[in-house]
Image 1 (cartoon, helix red, strand yellow):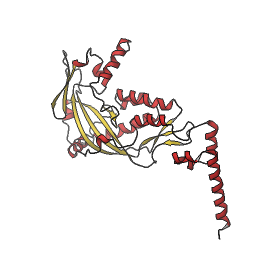
Image 2: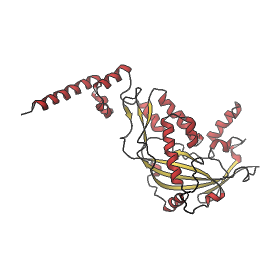
Image 3: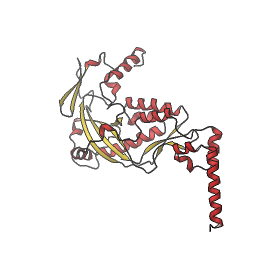
Image 4: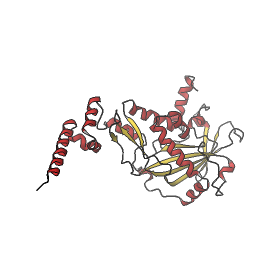
Length: 307
């Protein structure tokens, strides 16, 4: 025989479930399981302000296209860690810089701080993310950071060296009259040298002429989620402590001596202000230095006297 306490609890829970289904259709609860975690008062407040309880398809597709979606990219599935590359990064103390930059990158997006995003992300990537995420925010949705962490698991996959370029893609193109004037020649495997036709650069113009570009798989519980208009309900995002993976291209400007400084030294100078994230989850197809699309943007800005 059922006890009175159990019977009372069962009736209360059944009554609450009926009220929830009256407030929010059961089909919506299946689309967003987080609805079941809300109280009746919270559901009534959502109805009162007209906030969303499921993420609209156009918002979901925009968020996925931002590169901040947490699915393993097909392009990188068969990539394996390079032990030699990891040793080089470790000796350069770059893992610390990568962790700091990635954390600040995620925080600046959550805070909608475009000025700080420009300090940790390459300009073309920062502009692309800003435009994409603004479309979500203008519809009243919030992007929140969950599981803030200082340390992450890094798996270096591949690296490329460039000489005589700047990380900022716009700066490499803004003085050109023709895109073909910029030549990027392959010296040997993984090493490229750039020069502009009719012009020579010296160490006095750029004392850090090398860019160390490294693709890293970052595994971390840090992630972004989308919340509704009154921040009462998570519409999209994984569980709080669930690890997710990002494929991040970090780029660091180095001098001649820095490139060869491979003696292990924990007090080696940090390079957080020389390092930027150039691409994430391949949303810019690697964010190449030489791009007709970027060159056209600069030409258009120049015609309007913006450059």
